[in-house]
Amino acid sequence: MALPDSTIEAVRIERDAELVLHVRRETLPGTMAVLRDAPAFAFEQLMDLCGTDWPERPLRFEVVYNLLSLSLNQRIRVVVATDAASPVSSVVDLWPCATWYEREAWDMYGIVFEGQADLRRLLTDYGFEGHPLRKDFPLTGHVEVRYDEERKQVVYEPVELTQDFRNFDFLSPWEGMTDLPGDEKVHLNRIGGPAVGQIGAPKP
Image (cartoon, rainbow, N blue to C red; front, side):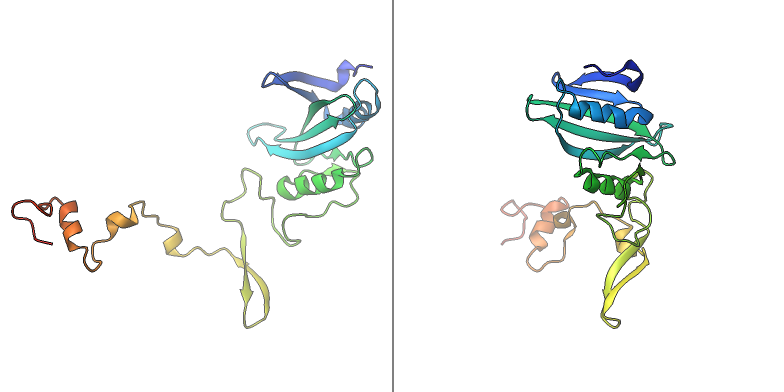
């Protein structure tokens, strides 16, 4: 049994061994059902589902499905593209384990899965703002978490980086130390003074 050409956008072989199938978003449920149920494919297991972000593309997100056929000892990677507003059909009816993976993709990238009844955050807190694996997410985040001893609870506050964390001195700490007791001779050698043991050098 072959997949209809209307479902396939591209087929590639990566690293001389890995079969990658790009399918259209609207045909994903039927395509995945064929890949699981057809004896010629028999991909019984969903090993992984993850997202990728390509901000420069109109369809910036890709959902990647890694499937395994134990009976035929073969693997395939299925990729479907989408944007932030267009949901991708859930595959939880085919592989119940997809709930965890789809929740993670929603949490990290904000990819919406249509038909997923448990689309909650998984790795971040319920009050977390944004999706941290998007390329446009700020590296410092929006809030920071700390334990307030007076209130005896965890509190959220806007991110405030002290000046020490904004200016970076890339000089080696060993090169910068000149005032440690007993280090005077080393400092003289470093700035071009005569080395210990040479004529005119200070005696140890």
